[in-house]
Image 1 (cartoon, rainbow, N blue to C red):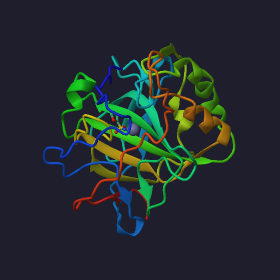
Image 2 (cartoon, rainbow, N blue to C red):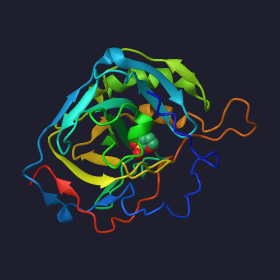
Image 3 (cartoon, rainbow, N blue to C red):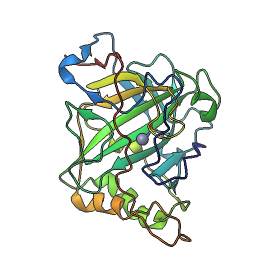
Length: 261
Ligand SMILES: NS(=O)(=O)c1ccco1
Ligand SMILES: [Zn+2]
């Protein structure tokens, strides 16, 4: 997909813009479980991904994006809190320099070593990701926490491809990967709230769906994420791609709903 959002070129923990115009639904946030509201009208998520739409992996200098062909409705997300159909555009991760932190969202302040984001845009209302990214009902992002444990067999194909995109701006062909293998067994239990992108342009266009159940990956698999670089091959100083998460933002009165009681 063409999620070639121009990330600010400053240091990877890019300078937080002083104020987002009218920033009252920014992400990520801490999810306070006992303050979340069970909504029985929330339906199960309907995920339909076609591995044939998987195209490439791109190191954009902030994370690595696994990009999908989003020119047709082949890989879609609907249901849950969503009224429309959304197309998968890309997925990526955020992680720390160690296993103590790395996720963007937290649950009762608990951070995880990493967090997966599956990024979708509203193809019922818009015709391009770039359009949808500016609209309040434009995007839907599924967040899945990663915990250190047993090796994730499905992730290994992606891990094996990462050395080819070690440097910023590198791309490698990557096909026939179904990201549904990265979802937890139970996708019916989630929290949802109205938020934003967590990297520039930080637009308040995202319906967030944060999975209650985490997935497990091995220490060695996450170590390969940390072997990536923020810097391009030409740059003198090589900087490890770690801690590529945004600081948590104020809830500002928003309600976080849960699909489970
Ligand atoms: N991290 S995230 O999923 O909110 C995102 C996608 C594109 C830009 O930022
Ligand atoms: Zn993200």
